[in-house]
Image (cartoon, rainbow, N blue to C red; front, top):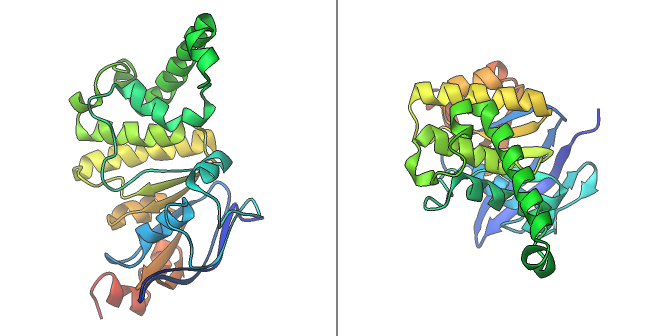
Length: 256
């Protein structure tokens, strides 16, 4: 099977610091890859390079076997890579619907003629977009779908995380990058959110790369794991396999 995403020699330097060091990685279509490692190991840097926020210093990224290494974030998004961030990026005064449409901007007509003159077409587009937003939210929580036009600042943290994931999903990406989706939530909330994400992954046949410090989640939801330390890949395999590697136990778990 051809990898959906592959990285060859991927390197990112910040001055004298090498944050990613010749990373080799492949992600199969429809899989959930866990990316783990201690703080500062290069996980979020990898997401930032992959999504075009940081340019690579060396190496290559390929999506569907086409090179994307030098593309801008907008082009990478159009090709089907979407992400969430560790810290919440919702615009809290805006409605849930408005936040979702920020993630769907590439699919929305935004010409002056359409928005000012074609009022009926604009209304049809808004109704279509609202229906798609409700359908996606309903997979996570039917009650949340009924709050579509409420301010995002008025919902609890687990629902904010759901909205952030839906904002990434609304554009129907091929590859979803989740950066510590459990941050700021209780253990029970985290389990519920990951159940939601797995349900969506199976329905939409998504490919996911997940950064997560909650090892019970990594064990539960991933097919494969890659472990980073100081920007280098130090282990790869199932969670059961990598968790027994001495280098991983030393670097990540603090065990000898």
